[in-house]
Amino acid sequence: MNAPSDITQLLQQAQHGDGDALNRLYPLVYDHLREIAHGQLRRRPGDTFQTTALVHEAYLKLFDQQQVSVESRAHFYALSARAMRHILVDHFRRNHAQKRGGHGVVLTLNEGVVPTEARGEVLLSLDDALLRLAQHNERLSQVVEYKFFGGMTQEEIAVVLGISDRTVRNDWRKARAWLAHELAELS
Image 1 (cartoon, one colour):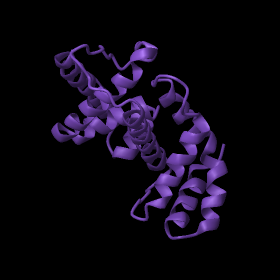
Image 2 (tube, rainbow, N blue to C red; image 1 turned 135 degrees about the horizontal axis):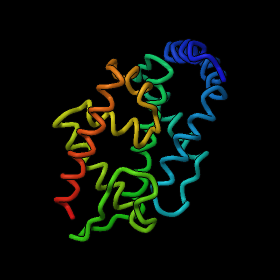
Image 3 (tube, rainbow, N blue to C red; image 1 turned 30 degrees about the horizontal axis):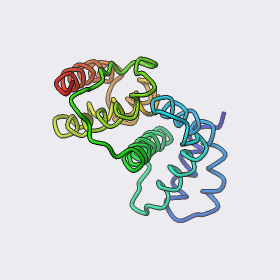
Image 4 (cartoon, helix red, strand yellow; image 1 turned 45 degrees about the vertical axis):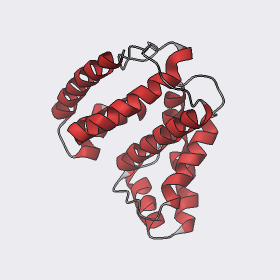
């Protein structure tokens, strides 16, 4: 595996317009981005979006925006997870624009619990709930996004957010409880 400092250095060079740094960076982060994308695609219905396509689109989205500021390797992966989440939500909304009725799906934030046919609706419900949670407590929302969507470890989340591992663990517990309550009201 590549040293985190090498990736961080290339990220900083890329931010300053070094196109060659972007070309050298991509192979170093590609495998981990595929892991993030694969984790996110397990949560959505059908297989119309391929892992590789999601990785490429997220990577381009991150570096096409000149205002993106990446502080470290872990921060880059957190931003990548967020970009992938937004790409998938937008993709689902575009391709499956249907009104959601009163027949909600219970979400527990555990792998494999959501029936395949309901995953798109759950993704939309969770996205909406995360936006509401962010208004209530931005950090709790970020912990969920990084852990659930980004597959980041507690330690990685702590580094990105500048908090302790214990705080991440407590925030994860609080966020899950808040989301469970919020999503139960929609059912």
